Image (cartoon, rainbow, N blue to C red):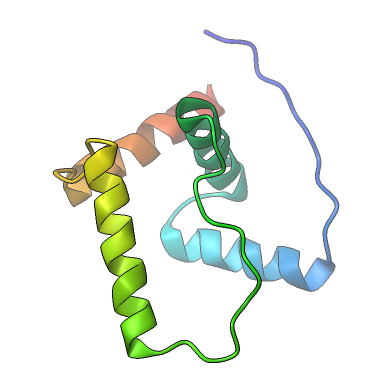
Length: 100
């Protein structure tokens, strides 16, 4: 078993509450979400999302283009065939690792 480490992050209290709730809605803890993020950064050697200035109006076409880009990214990373069960198994594996 690998040694566990702890780190803390300072953020706006409202943002923290919102993030806690989103993670709960996803069925995972904040710790699991951060671990999934960290594993993805290490595995892909990049931030797993684009960082950009927000646009004033997002159209339906923008949403479709974002979806298609995500699908292409999944294809390039060999993840296009992941099932919901595969995704849930990865989340469970991360949870088990963080609870050990």
